Image 1 (cartoon, one colour):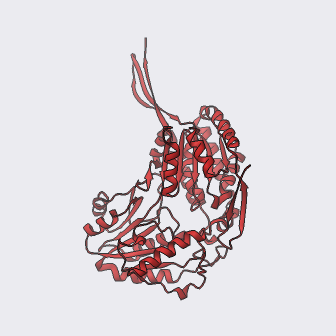
Image 2 (image 1 turned 180 degrees about the vertical axis):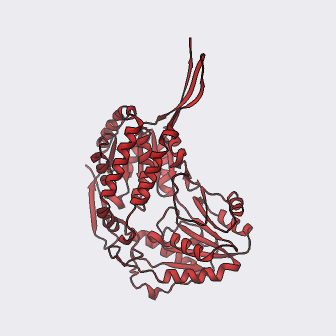
Length: 460
């Protein structure tokens, strides 16, 4: 007997969508269909696969007017921000553009005596487990290059954004991608783990929590299935004495608060040189004090509810613990009467914070940021590295050589200079430490979604 998945809307706590899960036997039947279809899909010309994928992307774009309010109802992002199609299309388009070069064989020798080459062969069936916070953009990171490279794809999306996978798969099928090449499924955790343990997939890509990543690795143990994991983060920003403070505060505070702080590479801690500290903090407080917390369907709302009350409760707990330990909260709660103790959570800036506080160590994933004063690059580097995570770091200076030198000393996946909270599809999206393993997008993304196969042909 199947169970049901329920998407609870953070707007009012009502059930927005419900779908039955597949039984294990039904899920295995889907795996078999997708696996059987893969060889024929991979045999199609590369250009044909690219064109079909981009036609599917375009179909999603045609639905954007429906998708934007649907996302607001499922996970709370305000409609004023217009959805995700810009980034969705940018990422897919870049992977389509570089596909031929990324997937071409490596020719070692072509002579009268030998032909030696390395080709890039699709894994087979790829399982994509996508998160709710940027449900379209995070999913396309793997779906587009996986399909282009000749894999078939099974998509399991987050319950919080229950309708996204269904909408994506249907759009791609309407564009001409066969149903048995890209299928959305509704699975519970136990069935997902069992499928992985049974070596159903050639590759598994998971974006989510550290605990979820550990569960994926445990399920895959002994199967030799490749896994890509993009997990937690506690991304720092560092504002140096030569930084453009106005640009830094605008970008870093937006990076901390946009999407109610629910961004994989959102800014969760900021270090500011002593000479710029007071100015930075004053301007940050002014920006945050002018946010409007409210119903995400209201065009005036700049900060919607968090996706679920339990996420907001964790942020409240981290914040209250920090204040009890000596941190100072700078945003007046009276400015945000909409904070109902549930999913609607006011933004907060904390100073007098230390790394003894969870607010500066644990992932918050909400609209709160701690700001610390530092005296030197060495102090800032030590603090930025004092974390179990490593996804991005944002450095603010007028000196690219200094940024590169500091970046070489930071344990992270991506270094930004004078930018934050952005994913460049031409660069590898990767992390270190408890942020995970593997890499998405760029030429590296294609390398991870294929396996090398060598040919050594001795001619008569």
